[in-house]
Length: 232
Image (cartoon, rainbow, N blue to C red; front, side):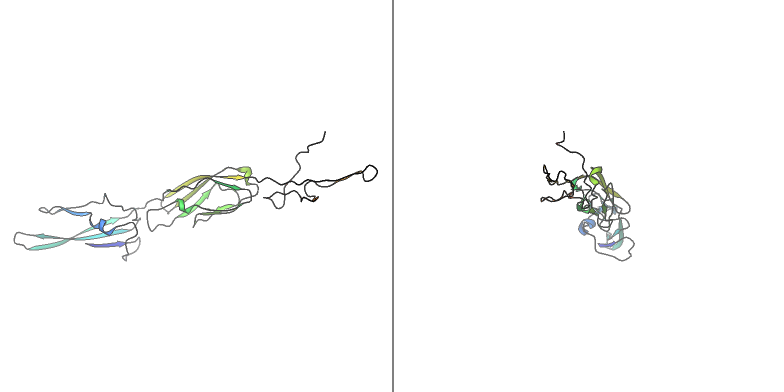
């Protein structure tokens, strides 16, 4: 049995792609009635998912007939298996994610998807990402630095879509962005009865030995005074 595989838009023969078994392909043919010459090719039990759109497998069988005088004649039966596109699938969805404001992020999403067609290349897109993050359309990697105020819009429902140009699959997951707690340092000042009777300072920026107040996610500090306790 001669077996020829051709990739899409390629007139040259190529090795079978991974996932196709030559012996199984050949075994699909049988003579169902030797007297009448009836034959059948049954592909129902074959795994042909790796055969993509435009790809073909051509099987040429030589069938020989013999008469009562032992004279023989032969002819060819050519079976062509035509591939079709299989859309990407989502066997391993991305888990929900948690990050902080201003955090640098690298998140791989391509491993969530697969495509049975061996020759297909997937491209990726995403919607619903926090400000500061973007997806690489070729690799499916989400990366960037989350905006330092992104927690105000949390949680984010993110949809990542993988497409092979003909079909697509989407993964939906949640990104929760948290606000980091600012750090406050105590301030101190003194006045005297018959001396300096007033004092002033800045409760946010003064360093009285313990450091100034800081916000770990905002180097330029957007801290402001919202309440004062201990005043009656």
